[in-house]
Image (tube, rainbow, N blue to C red; front, side, top):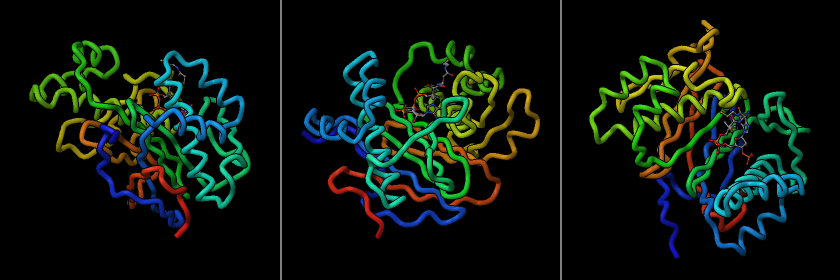
Amino acid sequence: MANPVKPTWPISNGLTPLEPGCVHIWSFHTSRPSKEVELLSKLLHPEEINRAMRMRSLEVREQAIVGRAVLRIFLAGYLGCEPQAISFASTGMGKPILANHKGLYFNLSHSHGLGLIGLSGSVEIGVDVEKVRFIENSLFLAERFFSPWESQTLSQQPGHEMQSVFFQAWTRKEAFLKANGHGLGFGLDRVEVSLGRNETPRIRLVDGCPDEARRWTILHLEPSKDFMGAAAFLTTQPIKSLTWHWDGKDNPKMM
Ligand SMILES: CC(C)(COP(=O)(O)OP(=O)(O)OC[C@H]1O[C@@H](n2cnc3c(N)ncnc32)[C@H](O)[C@@H]1OP(=O)(O)O)[C@@H](O)C(=O)NCCC(=O)NCCS
């Protein structure tokens, strides 16, 4: 059966070296037939499997397994090794990093069947993707998790854009918190981002860190029609971003 999530980006399995100033972002499907999930799970470390097995539903468990396995496949493709040879460590705040390699930055995100992997050879990176879905109380949630300026700006959006702008803001905040490794524990409301269809993506303010906002570049991503995403990079230099969808048929290889 065809996967209902239609990717926006061109399909490829060809890798090119990560030049300085360039980032590569790959989308992939995380909903896969059980047989494939089982094969992919063989690429994981037992600890990664155990962690996935503790998750609440089959869908989330499979998403975690596929996400980690595809991450291993891509890191191995860029580094020229086997996926099982990748060894992860994590920062003090829980951000996965490579245990034995310097100079390859990456981050993973998944939501409702779609995964994103962002890679950079020179700067710290964070990515986030969310399926744009109806949330009954989005303005109430915004009051809780967004800054007062963001909630007010959201409330002024045309009704038909409300949900996508909500997830646009959410993914910008989360991409930033994943790039600097803090994660959600820092507080989504402490990071203020630009929002609105035609606004340049950027971090406006970071509570308690006056110079932080201007150190980062934010990219707007729409990897599929119903998905909103963002990537954050620790640089103010222009960034060239290249985006592809990996269909999972052949392992990615250097061209
Ligand atoms: C990391 C976190 C931002 C993920 O959010 P999410 O929307 O559920 O998940 P996403 O699909 O976008 O990202 C998950 C991936 O991010 C990566 N990740 C995990 N912790 C991370 C961190 N601190 N920084 C950056 N990336 C992180 C992992 O690769 C993870 O997937 P994996 O565990 O399968 O490898 C969130 O779970 C978090 O902040 N955790 C830290 C604990 C915390 O602060 N909890 C308070 C919650 S209010």
